Image: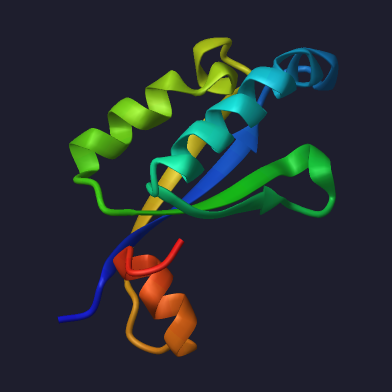
Length: 104
């Protein structure tokens, strides 16, 4: 069975100045969930004003929804998430190990 992961697309829907106001809290949020091993990868899109992408693993969809609800961007209403579930079938072996939680 392939490891399952979630692809989270963060869409900024608020005023860019409001998004910027909540960026430090969002970064702390990302760091917290990276340290916990839930977020495997995160980064901004180009152009940056569109939002970002996060890969998550090791949680149920309900648990992920609770994690998303913590994001200061979401709590302030400046961003929304679209979530896709994906079965990782082909990847570099080290990437698969990270998705499985075997390495950090």
